[in-house]
Amino acid sequence: NHSKIIKDWQLGDYLGIPFEKHLYNVLSRHMEKQYAGRVRVYATSASRDDGKDIIIESEVDIYNLMGHTFYLRGNKQIKIYIECKSSTNNKISLSQLAGNSSRVWDDCIQCYVVVTNTTLAPYTFYQFDKALKDLNIEFVLVDQTLLIPYLIAQEAFIGNIKKDKFENL
Image: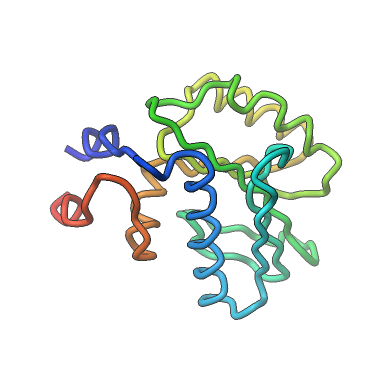
């Protein structure tokens, strides 16, 4: 059962900052391999990052990044903030994201992505999406249903689920 496998995904030693660093390394390698320097990936400081762990800047459309495509939409550049949220709980609450949208309102970004090994509570998704739309920023959620296949495809899976559990789904 796919949902049971996802619910049972535990990161172990990869919770918190190790999760952020791993995602940064995976995204950096993927973007370099696919776009040869045309997409830049930056890590922010581990503390006081103002709701962004990774910044991606690109002058080209980015295809199939963690299950999403990011388009320039007539702009010369797209700037994406990525907030990494790992948890042993099965949902990220609004309090864990509270304040992030207000800290990015004047940063001239087009997209704000939350990447998590779990998912967001429905109310959290709704409130966060609404707050970012009010700022003309697109909100994208990459929860475990998109993150697990992405990490497997990048040969960078972490945690306690083996790749072979997904081959028969």
